[in-house]
Image 1 (cartoon, rainbow, N blue to C red):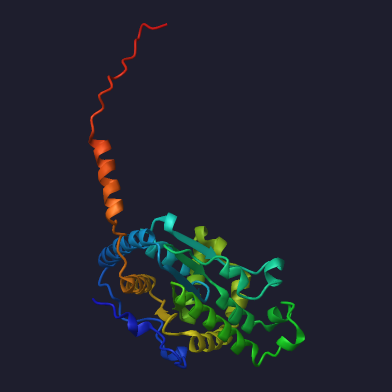
Image 2 (image 1 turned 90 degrees about the vertical axis):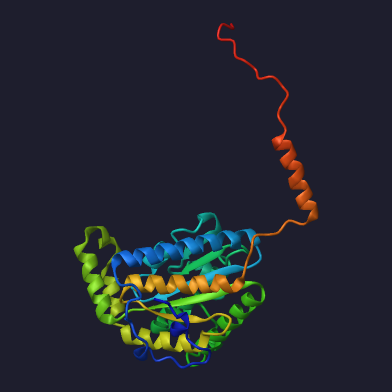
Length: 303
């Protein structure tokens, strides 16, 4: 089944109502075996593209993952990127900012982690937390040490959206392709996954009472995401709303979107010029030339 990635893309300037975006769609795969085969094919293609991307060394790609707890960000990153050479990929997970980070503008700590040309950068949560969790919990904003004149909560979010959009335009102009994923999970599916974490001892560490407390703000988070997606999805740095109630389906969709991004770059391995070809021919001659020096034979009786 062909994946039409445009179905999940948020058009620029579109007002997003997440109630109208599904958290579950008809599966792309018909069986577990087919899912594994499809994902393996996508992973293999991505691996080949990543090699060309690394060798060409002209673009960089930044993948941003945002979601509610238990939406499957970690699993999507682990499965989709499983074939990528770690040398050409870097993953950053952003938690609560440090005192030093709070003494800088809200983009500072993430900008330092942007991928170099030839590499793939993955942000597991990102600077978007500053217009999501900070908006849902305004006390965080009040504790950021901003001047009083910047504490107007009616315009601070609009100004932060503008800062983000302008930064992403700047990145695009300089060869970084930014792709953003919102894993759209239903409140009921989150409840089921939280229960599964309690039932599975190896997943207990992922769960705490703090997760339950945040769940109480579900409606506020949905409003924050709607405002964010509406204001910051652009032609250069699009948001994709990925139905996340089916983890396997979500991974196939995410993988295909990433592949589309690389296909659009049309990258190839660097082609040697005349001087480089001459150098390679000289190297070949040296390697193919038989050594005339006699082999040294060890004398077992020596000494």
